[in-house]
Image (cartoon, rainbow, N blue to C red; front, side, top):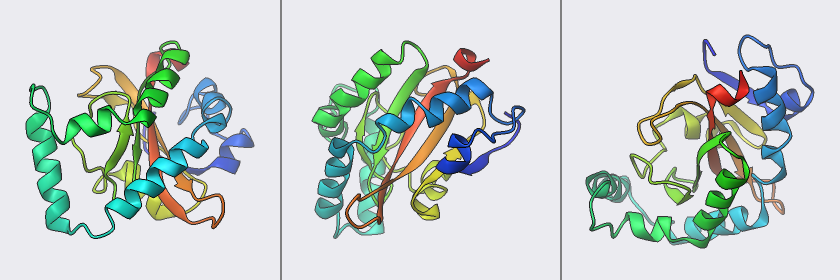
Length: 189
């Protein structure tokens, strides 16, 4: 992929992705397989719960948590990372990675602040709110899909394209968080 794309899910479902930007097999996988579980009730419920818990966090609190997460990556003491990795939703995400048989490299769910709710693998940072994967989905509204450039991912050590989706509350239609799915680029060419 030569550049980042901001796509709406109906655009992908309609099969109108330009082949030079998103390989057809990847577009089919995004609009088919991924769309069947990215808005699962358990994902919505976990985001809603964390949004309520994090309601009073300040920017300084978020920075402190992100700094602590980064310091804990690769260490045995992980009081910030462990609850995220041990969240029941993280088990569900790991199941999705396993069922994808190599097509998915990682999955992580973010709350309305861009903080990890659950993740299949440890991410390099806790706060995604300053990154395009969050800003171009959560910030773009319901139905937003952002497909980023294929890059070497530090945490998975694979060339992957990340596809991110805004997650909405099915009752209100409000965007409550986002999900990012890392796709192994070699599986779609």
